[in-house]
Image (tube, rainbow, N blue to C red; front, top):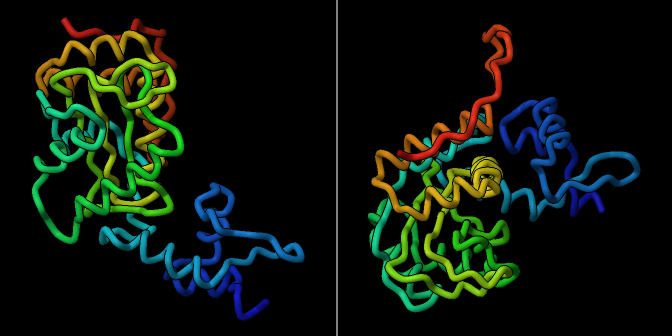
Length: 244
């Protein structure tokens, strides 16, 4: 068994972090392949190697994870696309990827395969908005996290559970697994707001849209305080912003 597994100390050495950091990651459920054997944390050697490679693939180490990443920040790194053609999900993704610059080791074919593998399990589209990202089984990471919002020229059947054709795609391409999880959580919270979805469907200009998403995030999802920030009185609740 010892040949198949490593302990906390060896994992910390391989990652180049302290054992305390590993335990913190375990408490935050950031190591998906961890198991307890005889009351001690153990990690399969083959899973450790694959996971470390995936975490480092975008040139981002665990210590450089941006836990304060927001959808509006990632959208500023990415783009807003209009009039994307495609009579089905595959064709829409092909045109979306065709607009992306070919930089670094990014492979659009591998990324599309990973996204479709995840979509095959459960379509992400609801209320006409798809929220796509690569599968954790086939991770694809970039040098920095970005979000792309692509508006389709015509609504397309994405086999959504609510049977509403998709008219827009949010595509999350993150720098690492942690930032991907943060962005997905934040975006799905925003998409729970009916007024947010309604404003998106108006297809506002990129600058206007970016400011609106930022306002909505500030309203619904306060960024965590820095350690040097002082507490301040809690402001009164305000109505959700809308685009004028």
